[in-house]
Structures are given as structure tokens and as C-alpha cells.
Length: 207
Image (tube, helix red, strand yellow):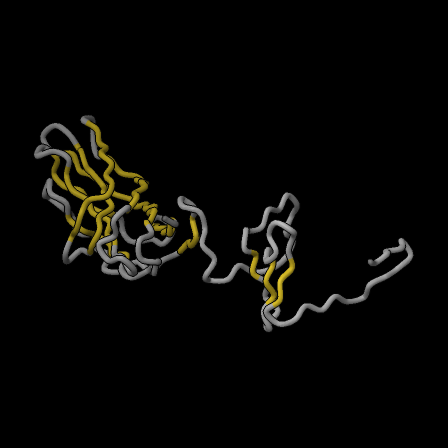
């Protein structure tokens, strides 16, 4: 038998390589390999605050959490040409700007400044976020309609999209597309490219 006195001090406890620390009901609750990185067989129940450390790349977050943010992706192939079609026309590409884990989703925010010219009776337009590129528009993920019957419409348009099935499972491409909202509208065009007006943010969402 051992006796422990309150005045006693223990400077070190050494566990053999591959040894365990546990309870009577869970004898291998903590396994300590030679490299000193313990494994907790039943997980860690912590009610306090972890104040330091870095999460490694193999840590798995719960579903629904944002695990990566691309704040200023490179935007390419921007055009400010007038669009006279009611169909979607791509005007800026967000190509290969985020690399995700296969099976995860992507949340996209986009902002663009457009100028819509009134025709016979209105100035209606729409802006969308699509999978794909200007050269090959894919599935429309989100769109926003706007306009007026009183005169030309110009200003910023911002919208969100959620890609739950990226066409490319690891390096998805996206495109901002625009079009007229009515045959009675003359045209819609992006404003001259300004970094503060044309924005995009990409977020990887754990599944």
C-alpha cells in the first residue's frame, strides 16, 4: 500500500512508450506513444478554456462550420461591354480561387456595380452567381432581379449563393453573370472595373 502526505511532491511521472493512463472502467483512456502525443480514446470533455495551440490540418470540424475563407480572390476576364440579351452573360470569372476538401460545400458572396438603360418602358436587369466560367456558364446558384420603370438604374448589386454540389469537387470555378430583365430594356452593363466595387468572398463549409 502507498500513503500520500500533503507535504509530498512528485516532480515527474514517466509512462512507458505505448503505455496507458486510465480509470478502473476505462484503463486506456489516455494512450501515450513514444512521440509524446497522447490519444484520448473517449474524446476530451472540456468545460474550461483552451488558451493556446494550433489545430492541425487533419482536425475535423462539425458539419456546417466554415473551415476556410478566401477574402480577396483574383477576378479575371472582366468585361464592361453592354449586354442586350435577357439571357445570362458572364462578365467576370472567379476561377480556381479556392481549394476545398471533396464533399464540402462553398458559400459565395459577390458584389458588382451595374448600369441598366431604360428602353421603351423600363430598365430591368438581373445579376447571378453561376458555377463555371464566362466561356462555359454552369448551374445558376443564385440571382437577384432589380429595375425601374421611371428611368435608368445604376448602382451596386450584392448577393449570396450556396454551392452544395460543386461541379469540381476540389477546385470549383464561379462566374458573375448579368442580363436584361425585360425585352423593353435597352441594355445592362457592368461599370468600369474598380476593385472596391467588384468583390467576391469564398467560404468552405464543412460537411
